[in-house]
Structure formats: C-alpha cells, structure tokens
Figure 1: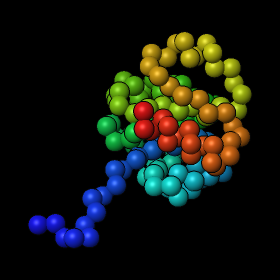
Figure 2: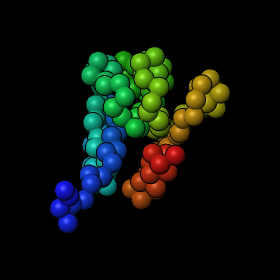
Figure 3: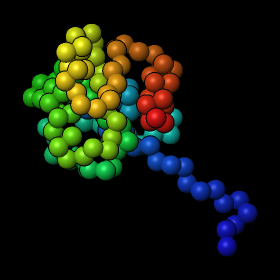
Length: 129
C-alpha cells in the first residue's frame, strides 16, 4: 500500500556532455544539474567513448571542434552502438550545412555563446520530443 505522501520518482533525464573546454563543460553540467538533469561530463572524447553506456542517455551534447576526435566522429561511433539518444552539437559558428545533410537522423545545433535560459528552453524541447 502506498503512503499518503508518496510521490513517484521523477523521470530521469540523463545527459552526456563532451566538450574539451573545461569551463564550458562545467557550465553545462552546472546549469543542467540545477534543473533536474543527471549529467556526465567528459573533456576527452576518447575517454567518453570508452566509458559510454548504451541505452543510458536521453541526450548527448557534443562540441564540434575537439582534439583527438571531433563531435561528428564521436556521433558516428555512438550511432554504431546506440540509436536511442538525441544529439545536440555545440557550435561556435562552424559551417554545418554540409554535415546536416550527411546526418541520417534528426540532430540539433546550439550556437555558442548562449544564455542559461535559452539553453534550458532548447534542451527541454529536444528532450521532450
């Protein structure tokens, strides 16, 4: 029997952030965790790929330009393992039109810099689609 004040747990909104700029990754983690997201953050895409858990994340937020492996390469490797999460690329203005047509499924792009409120609005729309 359920107790009178029992509330079911909120659905977990798990996000993976991969960005080689520590300050941006930490900012994303802080903003999202402050708004009921569970966030794993990696500044090294190769370690993030090694530690990746299939069918675990609702959303991946990936920087496009990173050393060792760019965001698009990371995306392609993840899609080989896991078709579930939505993908959002962070861009500082890189040309993305050629890449958008190459990607087989719906992905999203967020242009940096972005304000906290705007970021949260976009992320919530993506996660709730």
